[in-house]
Image 1 (cartoon, rainbow, N blue to C red):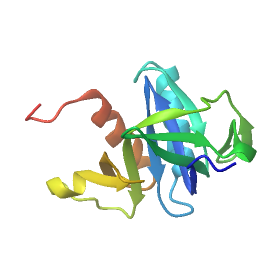
Image 2: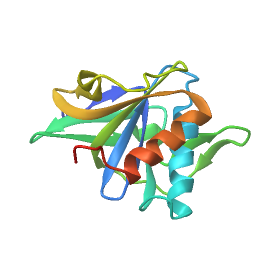
Image 3: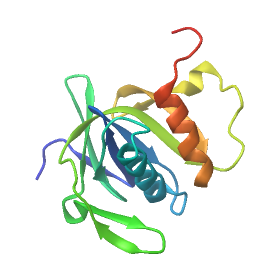
Image 4: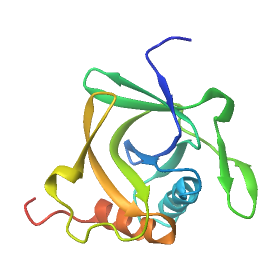
Length: 151
């Protein structure tokens, strides 16, 4: 089906009414972070959270917004470390609110303003660069629950 969607090696979770797109190299913890966000939603730490897609998602720019949906063959599947592939309820399509780029330890303590935005499929989006692993979830929860000093 050619509907303008392109496949990306990423995960996505719907949080409230918009999704977070989680990017990073293989083994960076995209699936673990997705599960952590879903669990945080179930615990009431953030608004409602639901899987959109894990491992591969499809993205498309439409009317100035970035839409994400799961790759058809992986819809509703999430890899949970120690348990394997699990089946979850999922959102078939969502608008991306921001991007998380997982990387090596030691993200900048005070990131430069130009690093706070990224272009994805020609759409500018807020970007968080965080360390892979367990350190990522607290930073994202802080992002979702706080405002910058200038807000």
